[in-house]
Amino acid sequence: MHRPRALEIGEASANLRVLPDSFLEVEQEFVVEKGSDPGKLAYLNKFVDERRSSGFLKASIGRAKLRGADVAPGH
Image (cartoon, rainbow, N blue to C red; front, side):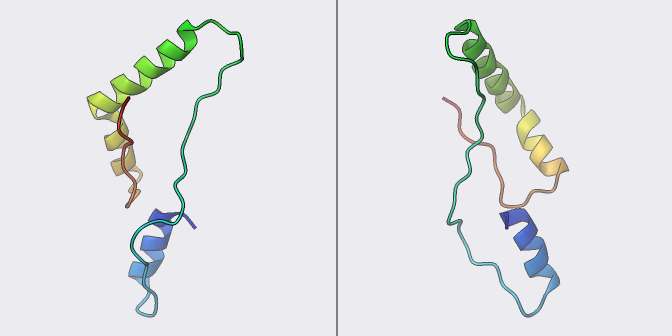
């Protein structure tokens, strides 16, 4: 179960508690075709870095009410 959902369930029940920390880290990745234009990777890195530095990703996590989730550090 992902942490945000586990926290919701734990808060709704007097009989359950959510243990601290995660036992699994899930990374998200972009995939590009081998041999494709090297500019694709540079574009994707720039795109994500801009979203990260603008606060867009943090705000998106907040709007989704994903407790326990945070923006990964940049390069």
